[in-house]
Image (tube, rainbow, N blue to C red; front, side, top):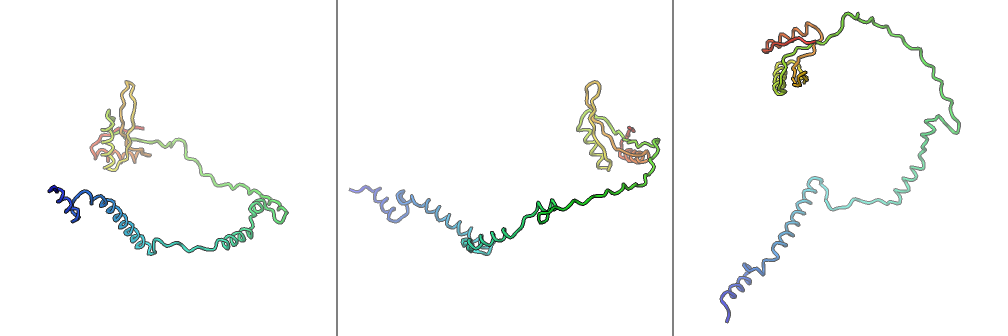
Length: 194
């Protein structure tokens, strides 16, 4: 006697829609079909961008003729770098040309400025801060106003570190006074430092 579940399995196998026995090759077949389609798409893109078939070989030359032609060209060349550098021609050497030094040219020397006018560099100290972040903030505010400034860390005798914000350097007193007016307009009261 045939069991009722066995008949159903056999019918499903015949119809191709069901049991475990017929479904094993589907994954491998899908991978192979996917690889083939991917290769075809890649070849189509290669042809599209280069306008040449992707699987053709380049035409080959007769290597024997190319080798003899290139060796003949090398044998015809003359490498006479040494002769060019040493001045030798046909087994004889040239005498080196004598070099006559030119007399030194004397330029008119401008008189030096008197030592009384020394160039001093002037700075405006905007502040000294215990926190580097605060000093950087003030420096950024000065940059927004258009004033060049620097932050200098200074070690104090008691061991603390202060961060000085200085604007400058300025080469003349007049230039420094113009910068002072700009600093005061921005809300700072600077101190002149030399």
